[in-house]
Image 1 (cartoon, one colour):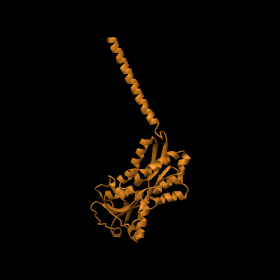
Image 2: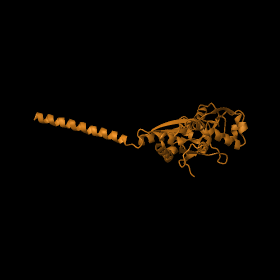
Image 3: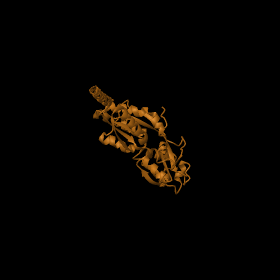
Image 4: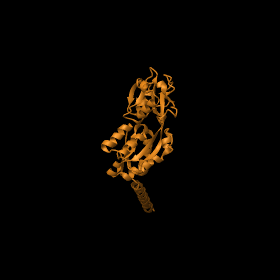
Length: 271
């Protein structure tokens, strides 16, 4: 009887081991059958898009098995990466202007451009608005410390310059500028820490943890504003690098996850 019991115990242990092996094998098999397991794709993204892009990229990697390398920077900076080293398979600048430039120079594959979301400029000020900034014209008042994006480095810099020139106050405002920042992220730091009285930044940045409770928004009237579109597109580099299929999938993934963009304060794009 003891021998039978011991033998039964052996079968139980063996059965459990086999079952565990099958489960583990199934897990490995499931991992191996993900669509892009073992493949890499490189995305160049505007630094101001970092929050939603991090979520979208993580989700894409989990669902497809692909490895996504991301390079964040000012739109001018990532355009430079594309132009000088063909180092981007997917290109997501903070303004359509940079995608147009890339397309005109033959860096973008036809039929891959997708408009993702709106990018809305606003005036941001420290909590309490110590300089009493209420409009674009207040940026030109003597003594107001202004920070702007570098027009040569980031989309928000180009846009802010355009808005202020259209309003006829660029000369007076530029005399109040204490710094030109290469990314919108740094504009936010200046305002959240009280180093400056006002900046023109993207509306969505006020949803970031660095801004909560530290920054106030002054809307720019639509007739004085220059609302932009955030696009995504696949580059010719993806074809050259053999990353075309995974790049096309990521491109559509970025555009289709509108709920993530909206969670981070972006307004849906409408044609």
